[in-house]
Length: 69
Image (cartoon, rainbow, N blue to C red; front, side, top):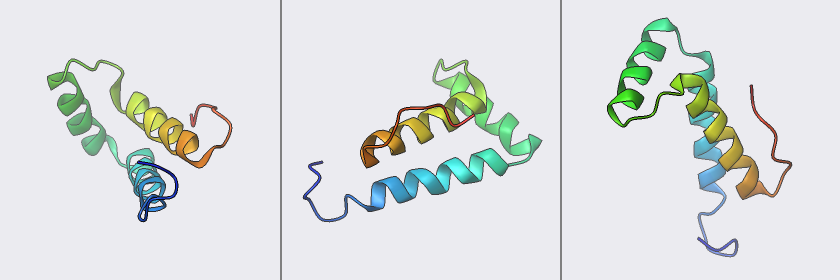
């Protein structure tokens, strides 16, 4: 997407909502998420996904590229 396209402001918001949800999810949700990630050969666990959501959101918003956790 190009920055001038309508709806671009929704993607950072959706990423932030997902980031917040997974960051505050309980152990059961984290186990389920880890199982889902491992099924896709991603072994970083829930923390990896949370960091990637935050990094992607920050890149879209043009902010500093720091880790969320």
